[in-house]
Length: 466
Image (cartoon, rainbow, N blue to C red; front, side, top):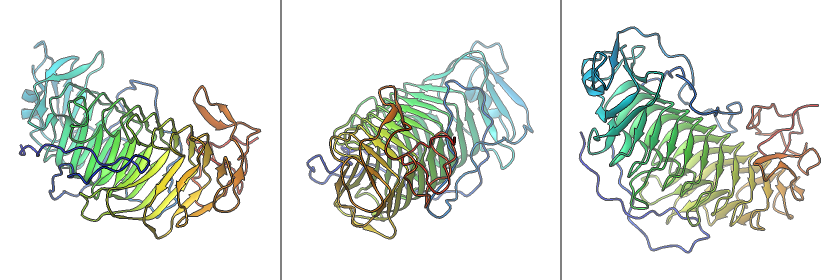
């Protein structure tokens, strides 16, 4: 068990359209050395909602070393420890079964209500310890936080899978993990924690997949951490998750986190930003739908540098195949708390429509290296496609509502298939069809449709061939 962090000061990552506040102290952060390992992902135990990641993984930057993604779990080599809250099985509590579990074992949890628990032992490579909900109803972890940090505490453990459980109403964080490696959260639900929902601090090879994270940060802007937080995590994947209605950021990769992918998620109605990359590097943000960030000046996707970062640097970030709509601070935005550098940023084949402030908010960002703005749809973003200078970008083949910077652009209003119904694919007669560049474009669109030869469509969607 670790000591409690100091109280969290107010948030600082509002975008440039909001008048800047005086400098504020950083949020708390923990520093520990991470173990190294490889991740193997648990086979899905049954869909709770019809959501799957779309599109083929791609990046216009150098390859990013990420976890292996969704794949077969190692065959069970140990015993099954059966838990039922009514006493009808071998163990009545998860903690009792966990105390006996050895590498390769599965703790099978029958539907019912359970107290929080601390994972007492690690698995090994090829012999993970799995905590799995049995079919037939909800497994609710809804009382008694395991530690002063989380209702479920994974700290210091490796080769652990949590599958199908529901963690509710934590007094602090829902699922907490400090100094961990090779952890998979599969089809978990984390709801209504007073502070962050799923929090990883200083770890390696972390996967959160097909999970539902909602209603966290329930105490408001005094809450520590975010709905899903990756803080100084090396090698991570967040895929196929639904992240909604949280009181701070939806998905946050920050403070020197690296080698990660955030893809195929739906993040909507969070205070925002819905997805935030802060002082991190070598990350791909792709195939996400981000909408309705509710906080003042909060964007759908934000790239930022806060003062708490040692490096004050964000680098090698690819943002592609995303759809950003209805966000107060713009579709995609840059933020610098006081000073910092941004290097090698690619923003390619995104659809940015119906956002307040602008489609893209650059502000006074200091950019270096190779930065690209290409094949993006800008539509009805409070009458402004871009706020700020794009002088440090290569800008081409975008669909602008009014003449804009760069070359080979298309000017006109996009025509969407069904904007009111949420389908922002370009209609066959829309400007932007067949007007994009193949250079750096992801090979498939947000729905997995292959892009067409040397004249792909502009935006996150590609019209099928023929």
